[in-house]
Image 1 (tube, rainbow, N blue to C red):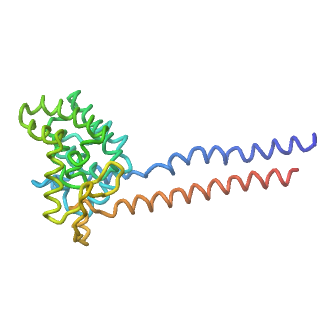
Image 2: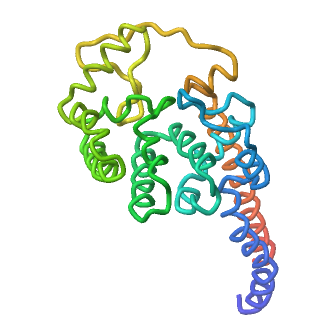
Image 3: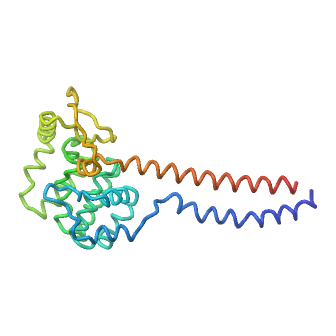
Length: 265
C-alpha cells in the first residue's frame, strides 16, 4: 500500500488541472451567456421605444431583449443608470421587467424604488410601473392584499407622491380600498380577458368569478405585444441544455478520477 502512495499522488496531480478547469467553467455554464453587443445595439437604436400604449417595440430583437432581461435582471437593475443611460433606454428595460415572475418582479420594482429615492433614475421611469401595460398590467391592483405587494405599493405611493404631488392619490386610494381590483375584474370579464397574474405566478380568477375565454394571437409580434411570448419556453430550454452540459462535464471528471484510482490501486 505504501508503494502505491506515490502513484496515487501522481494521479491526483494529473487530475487536479481537470478539477480546476471544472471549477472555472461551471460558473460560466450556470449563468446566461450575455451578448452585450446585441443588447447595446438594441438599446441604442432610436427606433426602439415604448409606444403610447406602454408596449415594447414589435420587432424580433425585442424577444431576445426580454429573454436577456429575465436572465440578467438582478445585475442589470443595480447598474441601470450605467448600461441604459437615456430615459428611453431605461423605459425599455423597465417594461421588459414585466415578464419576470411575480416574486422577482416585486424585488425588481423595489430596486427601482431605491434607485429613484437616490435620484439615480428620473421620476418618469418609476411611474412606468404604475402604467404597466404588458405582462404586469393590473398586477398591483389585483394582488393588493398580498403583504409584499401592499408594502411595495406603500413605497411606491410615498415616492410617486413626492414626484407627482396629488396626481396619483386617487389611484393609490382605489388600490388600497380594493376598488381598483373590482374595476380590473369587471373590465376583464367584460372584455373577455384573463385576470392578471397572482402572487404565486399562476393566472387565476378572483373568488367566485370564472375566467372568460380568451383568443390568443399567434404571430410572434402579437405574442410580444400581449405579454404572452414564448420566452419562458426559451429560458427553460436554455436551462435544460446548460444543466445537461454540466452533468456531462461532472460525470466525465468523476469517471476519470475513478479510473485513475482503479488503475493505481
